[in-house]
Image (cartoon, rainbow, N blue to C red; front, top):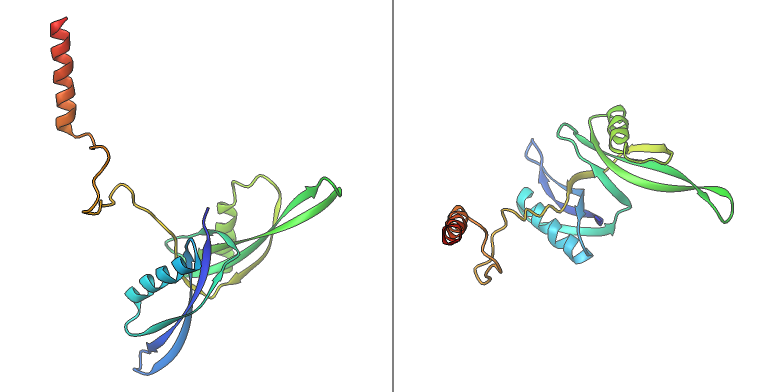
Length: 179
């Protein structure tokens, strides 16, 4: 399960006309703890910002899922209400959930939200879609296949290679010839 944090970062930005101005930008990060969120924010922002910057605020976000898209210029925050029935009271109950959608406009955001929510089988209502102040999203992606093993650690098992497969085949051939 993803745990999203909104991190507000402040820094001096140089405009196209050469003037410096203070800006604050909000980034959404997938992190385990507040400390992890701060470390990831510093790591990500340091690659984009030249000079000093300050992580001003970190707060846990109510966003439960993101729907990224290559062509989306803006991030839209969508609120949906899922209708459930409280069996004890016998009344309908609405549960609000929030999503982040990358799109060029509100119409496209609604379309991409509905495509992304196609897996939900219970009835829901889209109650709002607003332009978000979030500049960029940084999810956790572990690339386990290409991850290098640190030099101070050794793998538990050796991965199979072609030479291992050939050795097994020759061992099998030798056993067959003995029988």
